[in-house]
Length: 206
Image 1 (tube, rainbow, N blue to C red):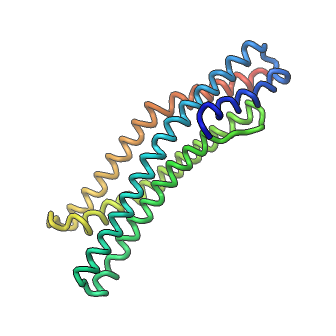
Image 2: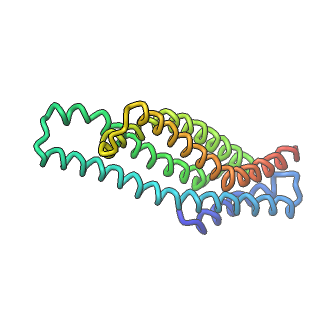
Image 3: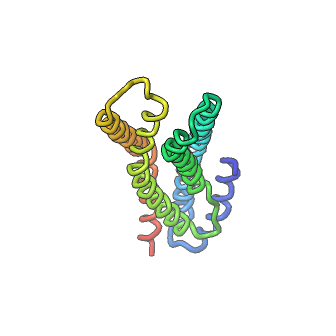
């Protein structure tokens, strides 16, 4: 759904709350405006990263396809190709997971609802918190293996010992996780807190 259509839908649905809440129409209109603007900003940013994530996932899949094609035309033994399949599978899984992550995030902030404003905010916050915890957990498990697979398949020319590859894989995972956390803290968490404030205001009115 386009951003302006999304905002219009939220405004239309949540205007019904004016007749049901104990807030003054002016106060509730301000909460609706703040929530709609915040949701719109989060949707816009998530849509941007969805596009980036799709391209990134596509490139990883093309890399795997290109690597398999190279092995085939070089006449590698079937046994050699089979031995590399688990590492290739890890990269494919990581690519698909990355694509799902950005799509799911966009869906959370793009969802339209016929619920009350209070329930709409509560469900969005709950979905985001579950998403954030789940994706962090999977990333910390999957990313080190994916980095390891990249070194073993595509960076063999570096001739690094196994201990160094493992260390670098975990170091890159830690750095990636830190950058992800800093980005979310800077861009997302402040807006999530604003939505939590709006929700508390609605809950305290009763």
